Image (cartoon, rainbow, N blue to C red):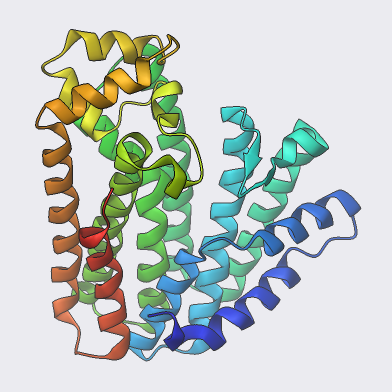
Length: 314
């Protein structure tokens, strides 16, 4: 599905490197590591597919792709420090290698580059969208810490967190292109709806696999969220019926066998099945949002991304 935007993605890598260029060696090195690590580039892909679907100016889609990816990358530098992470995409976390000050200021440097892109867009609506997106990301990070600290576990808090950490960036990648392409209010709303629902399905599936997936396929041990005290959707369902699950979550699964016991509790209940049902519902909602747009290769590719979350198995 990405063959359609292969040329755009290749150009994106070059332009991202340009945006991250700095005369300061440490900032330049962190930027180079970011480009080299690559990642899925899912957010830029969404922007480019939206651009194709809307017949938008290529420069508009590129500007949105760069702004969203830089905002995402800045948030990752800050998140790694907050979470005391050891690695990022298989490499040593930036703050581990360069220290807290360099990592934080490099993230701020990326945010400054986002401001430059917004200024060059000459769009108040796009600037407002990115401002709201950045605020939501910050709120979600603090809410996640707050929920774990105060044990204010709820489905409302969970969805506010995953929307802020994942879905609003997906939505901004699509809606931003729509804004610069001058689409109608209904089309802009549909783009945002697709991004939020697809982002929810994507993040819920990642959370599901973090607990119930195959460690060999994931390339990391299962239960990482539980060790950080994060109550994901299947765990929240389990909290409604199991005090044992609540105790495991409260102690961040620190006792031997806690992860295995939580997995067993989830599998022995209806929590796993209900989680998959919600993932499928979110993905179908995303697909439905694109019915407002004419059939095209790009529209089909976007729908295929959402369909992939329906098909992804543990």
